[in-house]
Image (tube, rainbow, N blue to C red):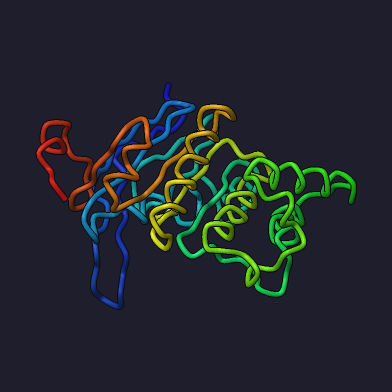
Length: 232
């Protein structure tokens, strides 16, 4: 069985009496250690799928199994607990706390766990070292470049040592050089640290850093033949 096994998943959002289908019977299998680029036009369901895999939302129908855990059977509280242990999220706009230092931002997820101050410090230091920012630990976001802020956000996603990293347009707010550095870092996390990564992107160059490209169209996975013909 694959590490991520999504079967016949549907997601419908309801606005008053109106139903808005986003995912329509989607199937997806991802092996442990893969780096997947998820592409598709706006409204195709990319971010919705990412939120389901990260246990930020629940499917209307279908099953989602990650490792030995069945997300579709979990309560909100169980999904929150699962996410804190197994999943790291990387956003386009970093979502760093401006009044906190880089080290303090990275350490925020560890507040959910019981551990000593020395262990917390060790984990934060290691995460910052992995992303090459150990010398910026005491800097606040306003003292960092956009690329450095995203590295802090990646360190924050890594600090709990999750199996799965989910990235939603992680280079969308960066210049070309910073974006390239972030994508190289994500490749390293995949290859050296064996992190399974699913990255939503609109950028074909960014997708080229992944080991496999998956395309969505109107809430469904496109066939390999159809995906090969797409030029967006």
